[in-house]
Amino acid sequence: MPKRVNRAIELLEQGQPIYYTGAHSGAVLNYEEGLKMSKTWADYINVGMEHGAFDMAGLDQFMRGLIDGGPTRSGHRTPAVIVEVPVDGGSAEVVRANSWQFRQILSRGVHGILLCHAENPGAVRAFVETCRYPINKIGVGNNLGEGHRGAGGQNGAGEVWGISGDDYLDRADPWPLNPDGELLLGLKIENKRALSNVELSTQIPGIAFAEWGPGDMSLVHGYKRLPPKDQMPPELTAARERIKAACEKAGLFFLNSVAVDDVTEMIDEGVMVCAGNSEEAAKIGRAHTKREMPV
Image (tube, rainbow, N blue to C red; front, side, top):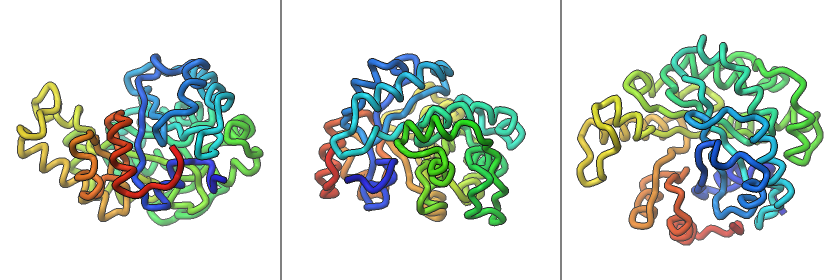
């Protein structure tokens, strides 16, 4: 039997890398796709709303399809779902002005949120506070203020998780800040401003993982697309290494693409959140780490 609502957190607690699949929201947000993805090979589903549609009705239907098609082979009610929000993390003011997006998304019963263009610690702090209920106090006062999330959506989100609204209030809190929390909050450090502040931004309590956003990081350095690995410019290599080092210092899990030919190398290097949308790479990686939880 699963020990947690959030399958991805349960694996990370075991020291196991996690693998995700996903697409822009317009391609996946319907009931039928939820049914189909309820038995996904992946540990979590990334829903891309940064460039996809901001579709709450579709997200509702997708989550319902996951429930009706479940449970997963590991016994979880649904796979974990993390949404990439369209909010720009350029400042605390921008994040707070768009806090309605976090409330809407979390009330659909998703298991995490990824903040794009997380440029400075003020924006990251506002992000974490926006996603937390004020009833949860762990970390408050340690470079973190009280939560801003309001009551009203906990019963519906709790039903998606298979728990009561009161239990949801306790458990819808960022992990690993709250050891009993079930939310995964992540950052994209994907432009030069974000890079210049990465050592500070990654220290804000409540964040679980971060990535270097190679597509956007390439753009801001003058490249239309990420160059091949064997032709990687030194400035991009340096950006990735700086972000990875900041994650390691802060105790955050590092997200990076993996492929069949490098997944074991990436895992040995310390990558714990694996992008790439490759079931075959996930099979190789799971064998490499002697994973026991059923897919």
